Image 1 (cartoon, rainbow, N blue to C red):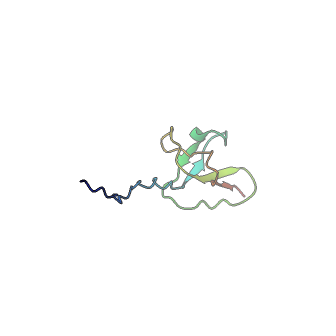
Image 2: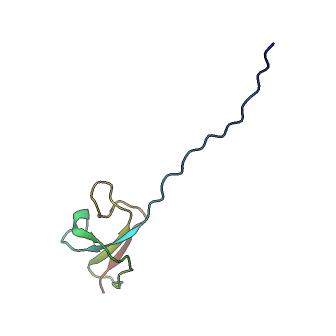
Image 3: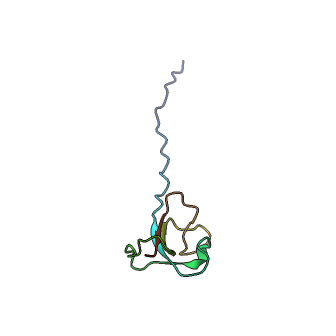
Length: 82
């Protein structure tokens, strides 16, 4: 006669890596183009905080463009010039 017991094994799913937002300075003509941004170094908050032209954006990294922002990031922060 065989005895069967259930095994209580835990399945461990590694957590998805946290997506970190970084500051990118707007350095081009088209605010909708990730190529028109430069990764800010050092990662300090820009001083612009007005209601004029685009200055900088804080967003996660773009998956296809190195050192460029993901402008579709729903929690991005936009900074405008004074």
